[in-house]
Each structure stands twice: as structure tokens, then as C-alpha cells.
Amino acid sequence: MTICASNRRCVFGTHQNVGRGLAPTENAHQPVGRGLAPAENTHHPVGREPAPAAQNSRIVLTPRGEIAKQQLAALEKRYDFVRVDQYVIMPNHIHMILVLEGKAGASPRPTLSDILCAYKSLTTRTCNVAFNTPGEKLFQTSFYEKVIRSDEGYFAACQYISENPLKWKNDEYYK
Image 1 (tube, rainbow, N blue to C red):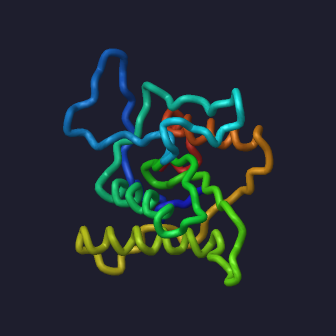
Image 2: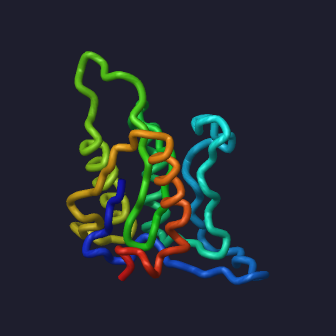
Image 3: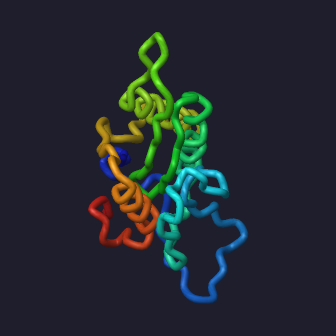
């Protein structure tokens, strides 16, 4: 799924091309990884791995981007049936694959829309407190979702997420 910053403002990060032999500065924000999955990705079908992240292009997170990343990690703690499988935080939008595991209990569990609404609300609230910007809208109201129904669809989505920083200048959300 994809969620966008309000008015597609670049509030989550900046894009950097990393040339050959250039090392990042020590105080640079941590670049975005392949996701919150454990080092041993046991959830991938046998013999199939998503494409590795581009080595010469990266997104350096802003403080708001770091908060968005922390709130993604908190989703799995907040909702025990949610797993953040893959994600990338771009300058003005976030792509992610969420896996909803297990069955609903006696009470209806939160919907995908409920989960994303909570994520966006908590991220916005945390940013507004941290930067003294009460009432500032951080995200657009809606989001884009697509159900992944096959291994091929899963690997295509993983590849898209992994390669998105490399293609930033051609991205439909580039501003």
C-alpha cells in the first residue's frame, strides 16, 4: 500500500545519489532498509528472494521520517496480528507490505483502514508535539492498497519497494 504526505510535501526524507567510493557521513540519518523483517527472511517462498536494494541511491530520513519509521515498528506491537513485511519511506510517501495474520477472534478485529488511520494519526500527533506544529496535517486522507494474491505479485511488490529510491526522480510522487 501507499500513503502520501499532505500535498505531497517532502517531509519524510531527502534523496541522495551515492557515487562510487563515497562513504556516507557519520552523522547522516540511517538509510531506509528493506523492511522490519528479521535478518533470516523465513517468510519468503523457498528459493525466491526479493531484489536487493539499490546501492547507489538512498533516502536519508528527516526527523519526521524517523518518527514515521518508529511508528511502523510500533504497529507490530500495537496489533499482534500485523506484520510489516517490507517498506520504504520516500521523501513524500511511504510504500509498505502489511501482512494480516491469524483469524479474527470473537470481536471484530481492526480493519486495514483502522490500522492505517491509527498509524497516520499517531505519527502526525507525535510529529506535531515534537515540532510544536499543533493541527498540522501530515498525511493525505486516503491511501492506495492492492491485495497481493500470488508469489509473483509479492516479488513484484518487493522489487518495486526495494528499487523505489533509485527511481525517485521518475516517480509519480516526485515533486
